Image (cartoon, rainbow, N blue to C red):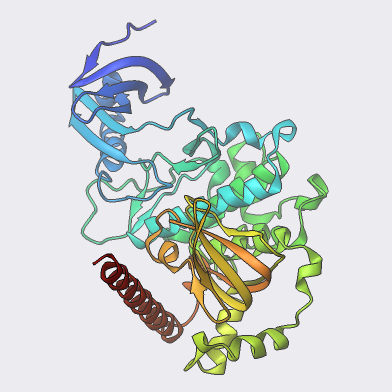
Length: 435
């Protein structure tokens, strides 16, 4: 067995954590940043191979050049790289307890459905971000999605990613490359690659996480190719009967062989997953208010002054209706969430620790700072009596029209100014009393 190096560059090596055909991954310490990191070191014989060395160098360069380009909580960060022929390595974020999704794709080790939804939702949002930066991953599969002990996920290995910019050609890997079982029909036909390729691959991963079986399994490449191009996967509910219909439809749309019928953008997949999650968690007794009744209640709120009817319907379609009994938690201090809430009926109290610091009533909104800044909640919100709320998530609000989004921004700014004015008045009053 190869001896463990003490150092690679400035990085102090502690242990080997993985090994593949192209290189070795080590757990290391960076004394400059005082961080634990992972280092992927290329095998020298691979990089200098007479026939394939230049291709392997391109793969390594592809992954390294994304340093600083893709910054997202669900994409593995690349910190540093050295790309000499005899000394090539990439320094990456270390995922604590980091395994991959592969163990959860086995029939005897399936995750609860709500965990699968959360995982695919996070990956879809990360892919949407990458696609907006002009990067198509092209190799989404369970082994390229890392998961820590809390099942927080990170997409890794962008080595064969495709940059959708005309000025980037030298290091692009072209042709039929990737993992055949996870390729989209257009990849197999060597057609133009778009973000929809990643969506198909993610649909394959979702199918596996739900059923423990690959949708297009076969023992020969030609048979795999034929299945992906021409055969439908076995129905999800044949393999796992408790998968709800709404989730089956999402998987089927992600795996549609016709890209015109498949999700066009990863954010659309994430939005449907968000709706499915809310539907699965919402008790049937809380679905009593009809859509027409909800429209009337919402239209009457001061918050929606100036919103035309069509935009109110947009909001209803992009939101969920939630009811709470007395003293139920709605927002928990310290949580990170991309939702905001509008009080349709009833009151809520704002708590910092165990101290009540404020009260909100019908027509007020809350949670908008977490929605806008993606920061931790700074206070908790509890119902005070029976409460009805409209809950909107960032993922879904991205789907509404620009004019509707603009109206929300104006209301948020007006709310912020009002709250700052009240805070200043309270500070002035306290100062006067202390004189």
